[in-house]
Image: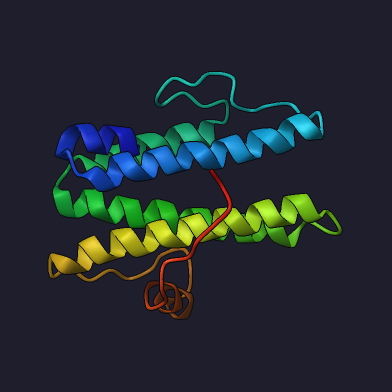
Length: 153
């Protein structure tokens, strides 16, 4: 989605966060290899996913983002909200596995930073956003806190 939105609007935020997203994928690949899990990412082509839920989300978010710059920025916030929600849910299911927990914590830092970045650009255009996937309290706490440093490369 971010690569498509970068091609449409040529805003560096999409390109930068797409690159960061690749580091998140790389971190998960380390865990997949370490625990000899099946890799669900069978094709690295843009818009190709093994889970139809991701195909639907990709199509919906890309279509929404193509409507206007405002919609495109909203898509960035939505994606990061979804990432935060999903990572929190997955992390709550992990018990006693420090490397998975610490990877999730690093992914959350990145997603919170991305949410801050998109929210800053969105609000700089005089726009307001109401969270859809995290609580207003969590959203406000994230966007009103400083950027975080992480260990993912």
